[in-house]
Image (cartoon, rainbow, N blue to C red; front, side, top):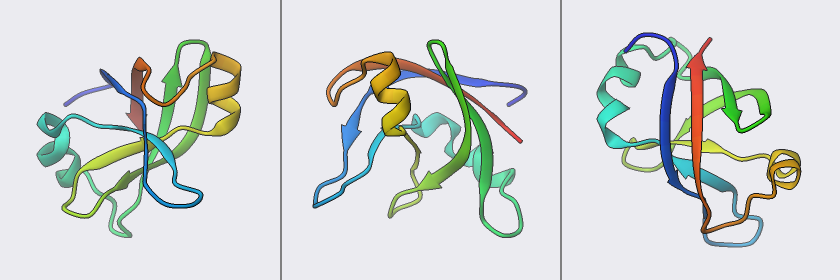
Length: 93
């Protein structure tokens, strides 16, 4: 895995009050991402959707699957809603 990771997926929201809006990273990247994990367990990334880029952290769900949280400001600027299919790319910092 060199450079950016790019994939298309469906925007989802975690259940519960204040649930994060996110997009799941495909499982095919899981093993390699785990190998590149920083000692403190964080995965700093620069994420890109359409015309927006922002620095964030790649996060894990229970079970070890990764996701990218989609900030409200990015969703608003790019008119993204839960259920939309979008393309996301990110690069590990």
